[in-house]
Length: 506
Image (cartoon, rainbow, N blue to C red; front, side):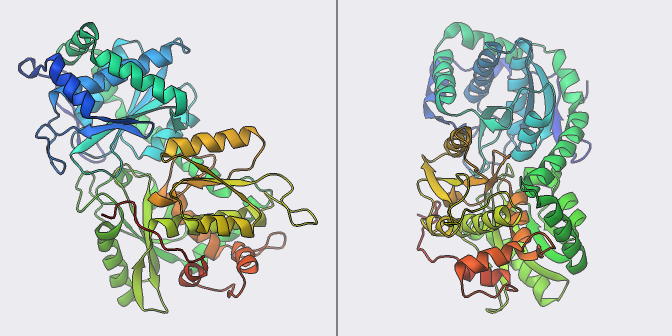
């Protein structure tokens, strides 16, 4: 059978008749132990430099043989976990655009099929997209996602989850322990080698079916994105209709530097142009990573330059730009600061603070939360953040009577804490790691740059209606000294001032 390629991107999915691991490359168990010992294993993902040459910035698609075996064993222990409670599980499998991803995914897929688990292979998929697919698609129980998020291109890894989110807490710790035990078990290692080197007839059907599952994933993600943006308030639909009308009339411009990421094959263009925004994209060839993956500092510079070029050329009312990481969950912003006459990068902590202002204001304006005569919320409301999140969030939340709850570093820990609070009847609309930027907006369980951009648009462009006040007016009333017709630059200047250090700064 010839190679299977993705019809949308032209990227190689794989040849199901070719072995994942050649007989001449079989690692011994000591090499596997060394490789597994060097992996970073946490609820946020199981990661390592998977590139065969061991280089962090390697462009090679070849994968270190011991780590291919490790990927198979990771899928094996996840299968064990699922089969304890689900008789015939179905998993979504996807990846970002790192060159080592397709081979790692094939190792996992072969293993899952061997355990009787049905696989819906999305191939390249942004992480919020595959999680929406797993959570929204009837009959799909969870996901296995191949990615190393913001790490350099030679890195890769695996994330495993049920429904909308990754496994955390005790489940994560149990899975990690089972993985370490499997990697030291000669019998299980031998079975993994057989899976990777032998024939796998069922893999042909899985690789050939990618396109259909991808189309369904995009449709689900679009619906889920709209539901998240609207939120729970009784006035949310009215506000969203008013926002769409304003955007179609004013047509603000947004630049996206997709940096060859999984978002090059996602819904960004459809969402933003559908709302009425002008949309300019750079570095939009899937898999062609043009600069550092971390969307901070130098990683934001090309987007800032393109935004400034559009402002100078007066090519539409462009005011905002965003850059995702490779799996397309986190994303930071640049904006045109009109009073200063320049484009400015927003720090990760500022991005999260801005999103909190927007979502808190949206909750109040839409009627999702209300206050008693003493000014206290009529039901408990919280925002959940990690330890390194700037205390400016405490100041902002305090202006709305909202509690701040902190969790350990790690997105899964923040999501888990928010879930606990909801079980105690808290409203937890927004959560995240301010130190890494972006925002998680419930019912989402992962950061999403589209929601970050939508938060900005909702704050700046949603007008008052007959029944709902404008979100910006809500913030201005609490902050004081603001013009309710202010620009994004004015909103940024209204944020409480704190000195913070980038998580990626030496």
